[in-house]
Image (cartoon, rainbow, N blue to C red; front, side):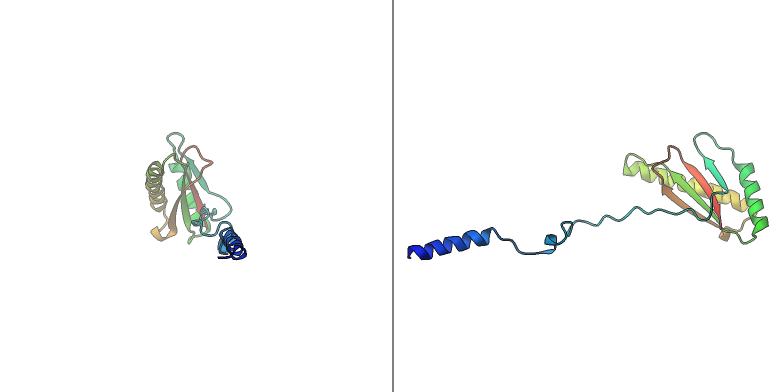
Length: 144
């Protein structure tokens, strides 16, 4: 082989090894990364909670909940009560799952109290979610 041919081959090999195939990452550096879904936020249903029960201690909510339920039913007989139970962020996924399960039971307890105060079962819905700004569990009752 002649020297100019070898030089041409070496230049060609050097040029081709420094190139890469064009793919989606040339246009979007995050292409191929696993998706990161946004955190689901449940907006408060309505202007504000009619009752907020804080579980920093042993809450005594029966009288204020009963009064609020009776007042809401008097104003709007077909009112929808939303029981939203909020828990603080836990350190581990297992602890978070346990906290959410406990919160679900607490929400059911409040929903049953609303039904005992005159609402139909179809007028009460429940939601449970994590709120990192909290230090203790709390329940908020909204009406629509």
